[in-house]
Amino acid sequence: MQQFQWVKQQNGAIPLHGISQGGESDGRPLFIAYGEFKGGLHPGKAGPHLKDGGFALGWGGRAQRLNEYYVLCGDINRAKWINVNGPAKLDESERPVEAGREQNGQPLYIARATVGNSLQLGKAAPHLTSGMSFAFGDGERNEKNYQVLVYK
Image (cartoon, rainbow, N blue to C red; front, top):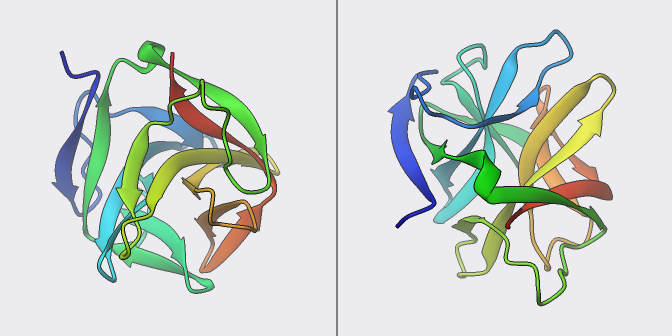
C-alpha cells in the first residue's frame, strides 16, 4: 500500500488531505509540495495565501513561484522529522521521503526549518552544501540547521 501520494493542484488550491507541516508567523499553514522547474522536480511550499500561483520554491537566489504543483497527501504519522546540520547526508538507516529530483537526476528531500516565528518548507539533499534551500519573501534562503522528513 502506498504511504503517500502527490495530488496535482493549481492556483493556491490544496486537497482535502494535504499535509501541512509548516506555517507562516501569522499562523497560516504551509503544505508540503513540489513543482516542475527548469527540468527538475523541486520541493517547496504551497498555500492559498502564497502570491503568484500558490506555490514557491527557492532556486537561483530567488523565490520561484508556480501556479501548478503537487501537494503531498496521506498519513503523516507514517513519517518522522529528523534533525540535520549542513548537507543532507543521512544515516543508512534513515529513508527520506523523496519529493523530487534535480535536472541531472540527483534526489531532493522534503525539509523544514524554523525562521523567526515561522516553520518554512523547502528542499535538502546531500549535494546542497549550504543546507536546506527554501523560498522566503522574494528570495531564496538557506539554513544549516533543519529537519528532513523520513519514513518511520
